Length: 130
Image (cartoon, rainbow, N blue to C red; front, side):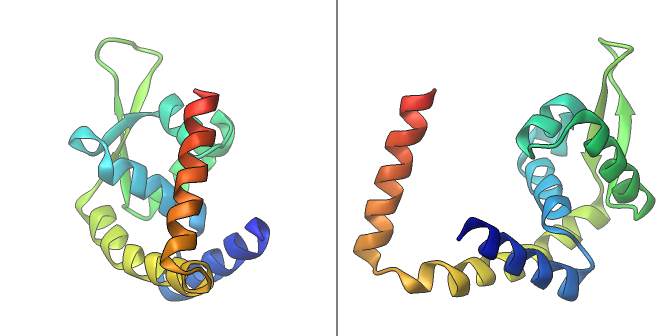
């Protein structure tokens, strides 16, 4: 089910916005982060990419003007990914597409009670693994 859902959501984002699901997730995490920035290694952990995988993705997003990289003043080896105004615009329009897809492909198949039960189950699993 997960693979089917991810494939459908990825295809919709690519078709509508030229943005992969992983690129969308990067913009989402940055858009929600304080000052729109995260350290690259924290971002890699959030989107479940290796550092090299995130580096390649960040290169593409930077080339497209959606993020910038900034040096970390306190750690010369570290850097930040920072969402740009163009990245925020892309995120806003892509978010609507993504949320619509989640509703159509997933949530619409569950009753409100089933959605609540699923949310409770996920909350128990997350709190148990913390």
